[in-house]
Length: 154
Image (cartoon, rainbow, N blue to C red; front, side, top):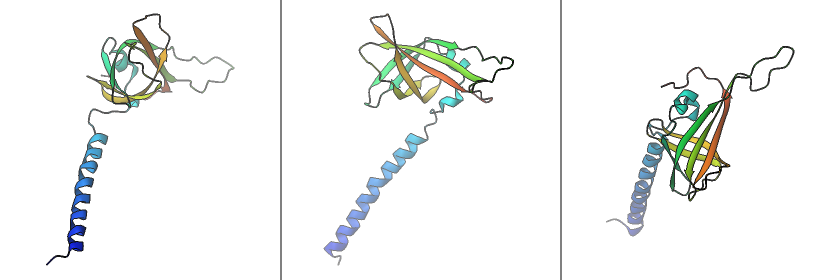
């Protein structure tokens, strides 16, 4: 015959095991999403090719705000001048992306999870910039990063 103490021990062990397994499975699933990628792998041509397409921004509150990519601007490369020291960001890839979103749903400046139909999911910093349009808010993200030979081009 099983004692009450042994019964409670067995039940507690079973409940603890059941509680931990789904959380571990969920964490592994969330961290290994096939459509999530590092922003470092997306090149300027790929991002610029998505002008006028929607990007969904998932906020920490759980809300989702849809933004439209309006503009992608590539800065000219820094040129070396004779007799001068090269700047620390010489040779970096420099560009910015401008998005437009609804005025009713403001996004605070921070790193947010972006979702796109072709690009998948990635985390990116975005901040609000001035706009003359009373119906929309403009946001910008700026890149100044070392050139990488193997960025996604298609």
